[in-house]
Image (cartoon, rainbow, N blue to C red):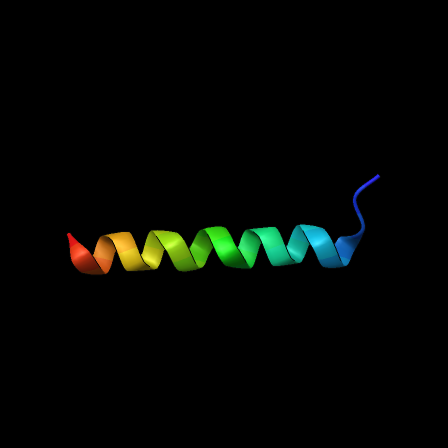
Length: 25
């Protein structure tokens, strides 16, 4: 089972990658 901390970490990591990709593009 995923804990809330792990889920929030994954969401934050995905948002960070999206922001970087948008910034590069």
